[in-house]
Image 1 (cartoon, rainbow, N blue to C red):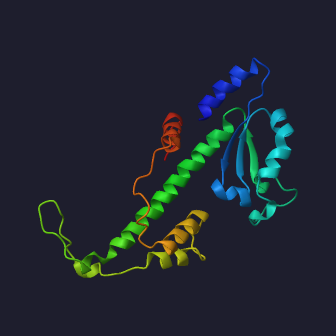
Image 2: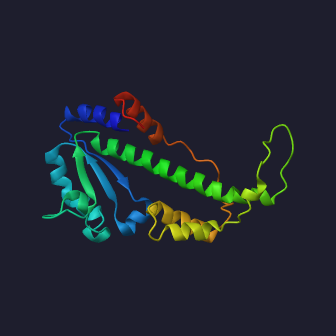
Image 3: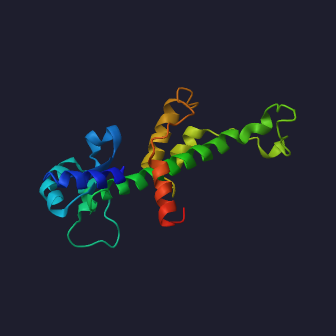
Length: 203
């Protein structure tokens, strides 16, 4: 948590220890692909450690160069970035995770809507707790979610690595029955929302 970084950096500075916080992304695949690194700390300290960050980062070839960029490549283009002082790395990583969770939730909810598009073909319970389906003929589609995820990977504006992983999971197990429907709260989503509230950033 970036607030812990700010405190730790101050405490350790009195003992002559230079504190660096590094948010990483890439998961278990980082071993082969390299790790995206978001770094916070004193400029001189980060510069001294740069060979380590460079060795752990993806190569410049991991993504096409952004149109319009020219001249020497930057740290970010190599997959690591000194974001600012103490806590800056974990602050950027915190927001990264907030975005990641939102994207995953959007995929899950969208795929759920597709999965339920065949409700008109099913016998619906009639009771006081269930809203009746008014137009069953509008919901008679049996969509292949694995194939839809696959087609979205190719040229779609919502294509992403997270979608790649979703497509892999659906191909291996179309019902996803071995996956839990519950996701633990690791804190980053709430921390991102708190930062947005504290700074009056619209989210």
